Length: 166
Image 1 (cartoon, rainbow, N blue to C red):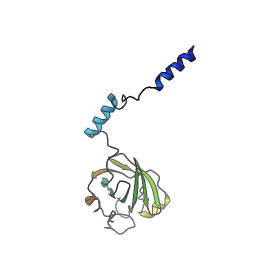
Image 2 (tube, rainbow, N blue to C red):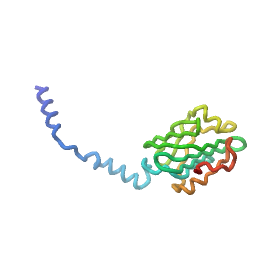
Image 3 (spheres, rainbow, N blue to C red):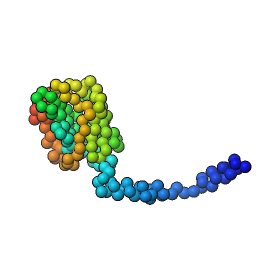
């Protein structure tokens, strides 16, 4: 008897059209309102622009799929990093490549976060005890012209080098 009842319930559910209950739920409406108000970051926000926190700086210039990226970390006398390379975006995942230095970072719409462990190949981009590990920057501008003006201040590259220039 239980099997017949279960089979009847399954068969009744098979012919139904999908409902918009989830898309029109109170939770979905609240999430949309929070994104609109800027409380929750938009994961589809453009990556291009200038990013900074303390003395860490990042620039991104180019298309959403593949762009130029530059990073400058400056902790004072002979303690810094400077790198130029490419970034490929897939949702909230970023694939960064600075020559032999390659790793994945995260993007949440308002912030770029580098992993806490970076490959050894990235050590050549830094001087002293500075590292690209755990660099976390917040958006300060979406302007490509502003982003393309970021210059290196630390690391092995010459000071003043444009990091996101074509």
